[in-house]
Image (cartoon, rainbow, N blue to C red):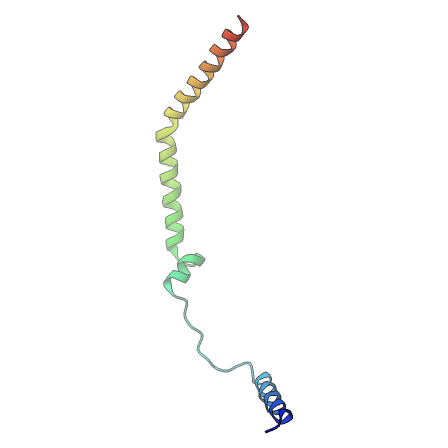
Length: 87
C-alpha cells in the first residue's frame, strides 16, 4: 500500500465519521446523587445552607458580649494612652 493509498483511506474514515448523524440514540446517563448535591438541584443543599445560617447566627449571638467587652477594653486603653501622652 502506498502512502497515497494510506492517506486516502484515512481521509475516507475521517469523512465518514464527520457524516455520522447526530442522533445516535445513546442513553443519556442520569445524574448521580453527588452531582445533584453539588449543583444544588436537591433539597439537601438548601437545608444545609439554612443550618449554616442558623448556627452562624447563634454563634454570633453567643460571642457578641465578648466582642463588646473586648471593644470596650480596647477603647479604654486608647483613651488612657491619649491622656498619658498629653501630660
